[in-house]
Amino acid sequence: MKIEQPQQETIGKLKAIDFSSLERTEELGRDYSFKEAVKILKEIYSDFSDVVENSESLRLPLDQENQIFSIATRLVTLTDQIKNFILKGNEGNAPTQHKTIHDQANNLYQDNLKTLVPLIERINILKLNPQEIENKVSKALKSIKDIEKIKEEAEKSKSNIDVAIKEVRDVLGKEGALISANDFQEQANEHKELSKKWFYGVIFSLIETVILTILIFGGFIPALSIVNTQGDYLKIIQVSIFKLVLLSISYLVVYQSLKNYKVNQHLICCK
Image: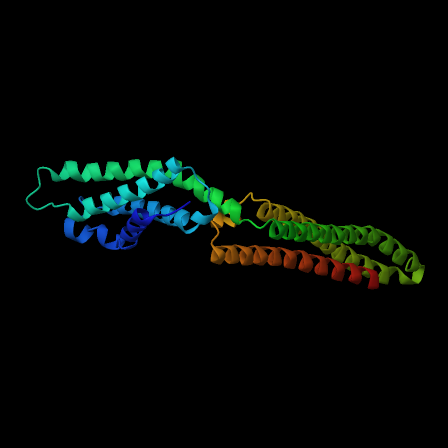
């Protein structure tokens, strides 16, 4: 998309706009404030800026380029109307003029959704790095495989509990060791119950970790999707760090549950 001199002038006018002073709430009061209209115009300006900043990556027909800068021109016009709005001495016409400006802002926002927003989505797609996405998916799959290994180890350990208890019973089953055997059995049962509880904790935390991994890397949570960062590298870093923190906490829960499970299993075997 080529930006000629007239378009450059329009861009310059938009950059010079002080949106915070356009609200005029203190001057006009709440009823005649342009706070809502300015909120809409700021969003349109943000979308327009994104398109212009990435214009080199876009190949657009002339009529679509004209639509883009038509939105920019109307945006400049609306900001001028807000600046020039007069309440004192114009009480008769003020309500109609105030409503007209807001209606025009809403109409411009609809045109923005039709014209600029699809272009921003296209820009975000062009910015995606296929190799980076592939690496993230590979890491997620490796994490799932590691979790499966932990799960298999936990299940194998559980199957050994009853065997260990039976062997100890046989050794202590002699007549002279009945009291010791009873004491051992009580403690073994206690640790067995604790071991079972921690085993269920391991299984639950494993399932939770798998689901969490799929959700955050599968794009099911929009707030954690790289696509929704709109190419903002700071947001990409923040989202990535937040994902790592979530996974780290989840893996820590799995590790601690498995550790407690093995401790109780060891106590069963040693008594």
